[in-house]
Length: 145
Image 1: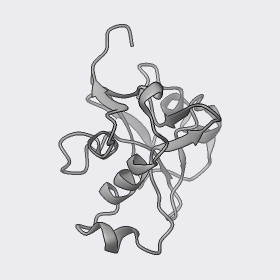
Image 2 (image 1 turned 30 degrees about the vertical axis):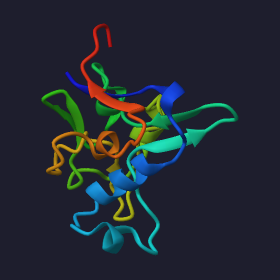
Image 3 (image 1 turned 180 degrees about the horizontal axis):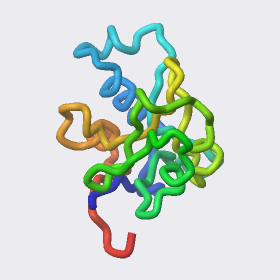
């Protein structure tokens, strides 16, 4: 299955992936209207270290502990993509607590949200990948991953 991978040595720390992600998940067709003067809500987050920047997002684990721990049965896997059914999520934060990657967080509406590889958007590839100017974020299938 294809997943999002980050080549940390190429990441500039520009945060454009976050803006592209927030726009792709906004449901709007104009980036300025979607993001201007608003708190952006990306599902990928760049962590900045002294000499390195790296992206944090859902790894779509083979044996997803968030899915196993969801008391409402709101997290499932569709074609290898770990997804959240916002109508089932009760906002208990169990998935947030168990995710070893820090990939989940509450949405402004209450249910949890996370990267779903832009499967609900018409991007073709994840928006973070398409918007990375240095190609530090890739969407690929890797052996042993």
